[in-house]
Image 1 (tube, rainbow, N blue to C red):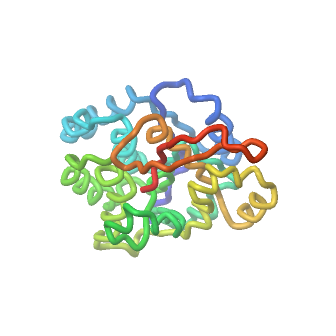
Image 2 (image 1 turned 90 degrees about the horizontal axis):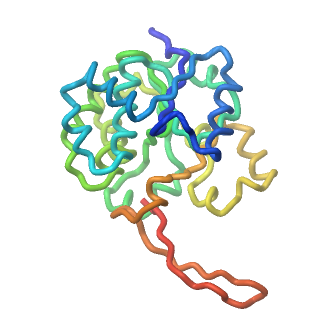
Length: 258
């Protein structure tokens, strides 16, 4: 069985990673000192696609927002080079070697609480396969299966269905050789919900210590793409700010609730 290459892939629009992400980036290099590390820029991504998968370029360029392209490119990079593709808001807690040993392809489940949110429920999903951290050998046939879904879904208006976790979940659920994929429990790669992160629970040492007993990594669910602007995948929640028992601000904020 071909091994998963020891290479970490991450992507950002340029080489200037935001300060709040650098510590997470460095955590992967710290725990994997003998691994190759590759940061792909937007320009790198397009050049790679044009050189190797030009048939997809028209769809890639037609996506309405860059987050669609950020999602899609990872399915091609992993097929072509293998290794581990990791979002920049992921913190490494320990080396992945043990998790990836004797595996062809490793995907992770999101927390069960995410499945209960409105959009997964409206799609009758019983689980969500997350694309934020994926590991693969070179040329695993699952990626060609995903590409078919990218083509079929490229006109979907929302990133979740067109390129993101809902698309990946559909692809996983219909792949004819699921025995070649290791689908790991959320406790190992996605041990906290997005709400835990946004509520600041990770600042609690006891909470972090409990998570670290099992988890290889923590996804911090920064979701800069959906926090920066309103999209069709957002819901609006009221928020009151109280100081000494008095409400001094009452406003509505948008969050991606799936």
